Amino acid sequence: MKANTIIKRIRESKLSRKDLKEIANTIVYQMAALDAQSLYEYAPGDYVKWPSRKAGQLMFGIVRKLNRKSVGIDAKDGRLWRVAPSFLEKSSQEEYDKAPEFMVSLLRLPRPR
Image: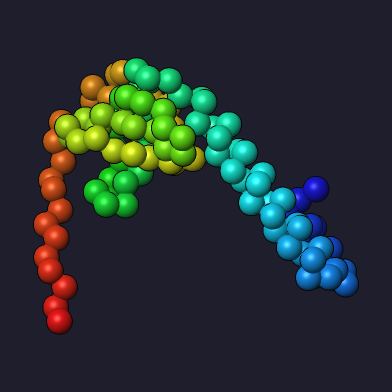
């Protein structure tokens, strides 16, 4: 069943608050299970890539450690990153080797008061 169909049926039904809360809890539980499952697609030594909001570019690295909710990665720029597995994608050594060696660090200025 597609998400739009499910949403439409929920809106059309006369579910109680208790029923809606149970549905919401089930969705949260299922999302956590999917995240946990995707965590084990990776192993230390795997080459990975991910989009970085902080750096504003595609980052490359090697998996160092699997944490409970994140993956520890030695990035090509020399920094250690903790990334949610849902953002990661497997890469190859060739792709890693072609990636830029260092990225330009973003300068963070204090906020005006």
